[in-house]
Length: 369
Image 1 (cartoon, helix red, strand yellow):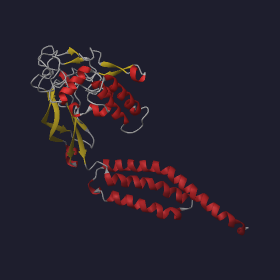
Image 2: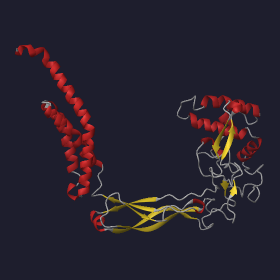
Image 3: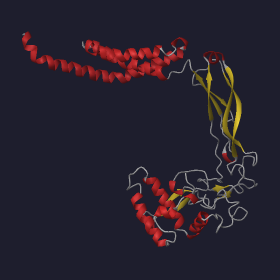
Image 4: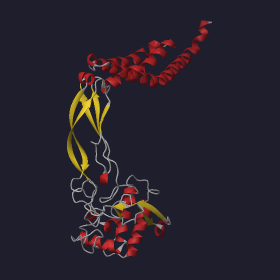
């Protein structure tokens, strides 16, 4: 995705670089009305509407427009205000060092909640799931397996808080702690004011006071770790083992998630050709049964037996001699699923065939009396 200084907002709105505020507003009104998702149903209409809105939000504000022009000319700090977090320009800014990371440049028009680069928003870390292949014997008797995985761990530079200061949570200066920002569209569409999630704090209403220069204020960094997962005897395909606190670290010092080892036992796992074969067998059984009961078995025999034989072949060529009882059980369940789906179609097909035969024989029935 192109960064803000790579986008030509003037070209997006179709105005010159010396256009007046009135010309910019008029251009936005014309384009926004054509691209509004409620009017334009094209697949890219919503994205183009957001882009036009973003361009208008920048160019309609004199200070934002001046900073945008300065950045496009190669001087990103021209006209930049001093930061409330210490230091001049944007070096200490909660927007991550760029004047174009904050509102309205951070995606306020999307209406989706997301974390700003320096948001103070403690959230527990997610689990990390790792698939571990086990042989049939290892699953039966238990096994210890070492795994290597990527995850977030607490940042060592800021001890996981995300801030280099003791008081690491400040009220968000963009939304004033509300977590959302009002956008007035009344002058353009008569829509009044609506709220969007604050792009700086992600809706939490707080920001990190002095963002850590290693983790960017999140309080965690990405690393590669190793761990040992122990599977108990009698483990089956799909069973899981949890290692507490070894998953993703939480943001801003929140609790970490777990490392989850998920057993993958090939001897028990029903998939691919075997799963399709069992389903075909089950699907064709109702056709055979109802055809025989209706006395039209010979009509359907050739049609029904071909996919049935194919299904049997797919099952038998799936290394059945090394499969466990659980694999066969899952196969039977897959076949029953096929029976359920084939039952309706079998009834319709047999009924249609029976009716067709009666209609064909009806004109000749008087010869028998």
